[in-house]
Length: 301
Image (cartoon, rainbow, N blue to C red; front, top):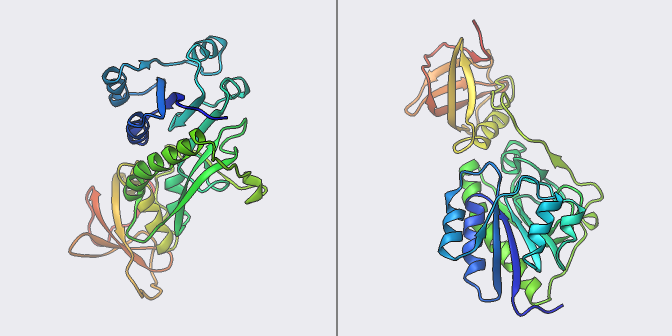
C-alpha cells in the first residue's frame, strides 16, 4: 500500500523519543497526529513539542482499554510508533491501524529482549550490542524485524557511552524504517529465522547494584561500568558505611593474587586497588571513605 503521507500516533518517552520526533516531524512524508507519553512521565520536552507544533498530547491509563482504543481510532492513523513507551500493546490496538505498531528496541533481537538491556550487555561482557526496529506482535519484543544495526563495545565503554550511541542511533534507525514503510520497500524478517528461542533480560531492581568481590576482576569491572551514571551506580559496604563506585579500571597482566576478596590493598593516584577472586582492580570516582586494609563487602554491623 502506498501512502503520500504517513499518519502516525506516537507513544514515547525520554531522549530516544526526542531525537526521533525531530527527524520524523521535519519530514513532509510524515504527520504525527498525537503524542502519548508514559503515564508516570516527568518528560517536559514532548509536551513542549506538542505545543510548538500543535500536536495533541494526552496520557492513557491503559492503552488497551476500550476508551483508549476509541480515542486512538478517532485520529485515523496509518501506524502507531513506540519509542521507549512502557505499556504492552495487545491484539486490539495492534490491529487498530492498517500497518500496525512498530517499536525501536536497544537490543540485538531475538536476543536481549526485555528490560535494562544496555546494562546486561556490559555485565555479560558482550563485544557488541544491537538496535532493532520491529513490528509489535502479542509477544514481548518478538515481532518481525524491519531493520537492525550492530555497534561495537570496547573496554572504554560504560552505560553512559552506550546510552549516547543508542539515543542517536535509535532515532536514525526508526526514521529509516518509517521511510521504508512509506515507500513500501519494507522487508520483514521473522526472528525465528535468526534463532528459534532467543532470550529475555529481566528487570534489575533494588539490591542488584551490590558488588560481589568474590568474582573475577573482569566480571567486577563489567558490573561497575554496566550500572555507572546515569544508572544506579555499583555499591559496596565498608562495615556499615555504603560506598558508591562509579568507575573502575582493569590492570593488564596482573598475576593471580592470594588474599581476601574485597580487601583494599593499596592507594593509587586516582583511587584504590581492591582484591577480587582472581586478582585486583583499581576503583575510583567513588563516594565514601576507604583506607588501605579495609575489607569491602556486604553490610557488617
